[in-house]
Length: 556
Image 1 (tube, one colour):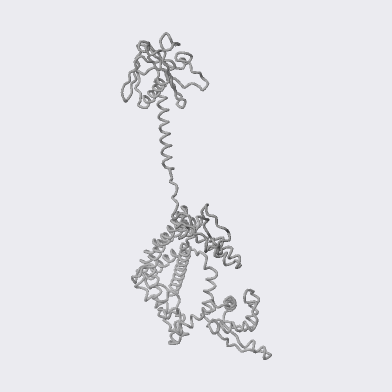
Image 2 (cartoon, one colour):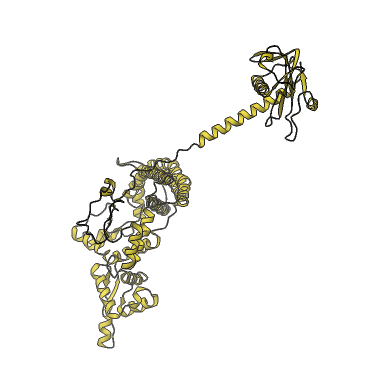
């Protein structure tokens, strides 16, 4: 779109719009690489018209797709570019020594304005389309500083000097245009990347840091400086008409050309940025909502939010991939590339390997064991075999539905291990308490855990004890004598090797053992308790009161 002196966009008619769009045709033509090489030759000159031999020499010097063109083909390409509006016929006089030279040299071409602009944009796209452009965030601080200084100069008596004002306005808008373009390019690149659903963990980590650090710094800086810039523009706004008039009076530029050629299409002039009130309105609308459509700062904030949402979507996809719900986009693209590069027979083999799509073949279900069908029997007349419903309807015997995942019991196992460790620690503490209280049970008060361990050892010892008849330990005890006999306890002992504690029980007439604990008191009559350490594995089972007594403490 061309912009007139008034600053508003020109609305061309259908014919004018079609002629301008024709200038892009060479970029999509089959010979586009040759056309681009030719246009680069013309873009390397200024106000120069070139004949076919001149263009041909430069193409061969540069190399590339255009170096192989001959004179006739190059002439056709130049004429086509002229019809599209990218080149113009030159008006220089041709000097030739022969008719053949005149025919080759009489057609001279030069670059048109729209052709130069289209080629410059095309080279920019080819060079930097896939690159991530850094945001020139420092320029926003310069814009804020320049506006503040311009406000101070306008408010001084006599106003700002025209030349200084022109320099400051031009610098201000160049800085702002560069900053706005870098923001637009960066967010376009960011949207292209986050739209992918095949990011691996390394790429995801890199873009996550990019969003959390780089984008956050941009949005915070813009949010911090936008109110300041908007306030400076509000202060400067009443002075803008007078400032622009002084600048036009000092440096009119090409404004006089448009006034002289009013009504002519080639006389329209695009003023420098900042010389029209519309430019200032666009600058103001970037930082503040002036038309109800939202400011660019608001759009920047919304774009950052959408980028974070895309990042979360990729995070959810990567979490699903850990459970098997993984996107196969990358695998399918690799398979498609194999198909594209393969020969026909290799493509068939790849399809068979990838999808299991074999050629047509006869399939059958074996008959029962009691049926013998000769090999020469036709399927039409052979016995019918019952086919399962799943095989008949789906062609597979496999069960449908997802296989249930194995239940994870790691948390329960962890809790059980912790409970077992706590129980073992409590038993070790109870064993230490019993060993320290041995010989003085009347003076101490046992804990519930210590009394429980003591009762456990006592029950085991009594269960392991052997009855004997007093005075006749070697004689057998009959049922008629059992009521009148006096019995003693032999080998009444129990121990716990893990806790390194042992208990020996002796029968002693008249003995009384009192055990005090938090749960109550326990009185043992005619029993003596001995508490010591567990015996070594090599120790024998000596009876109580023997050599083992030295390692025990008796309590009566």
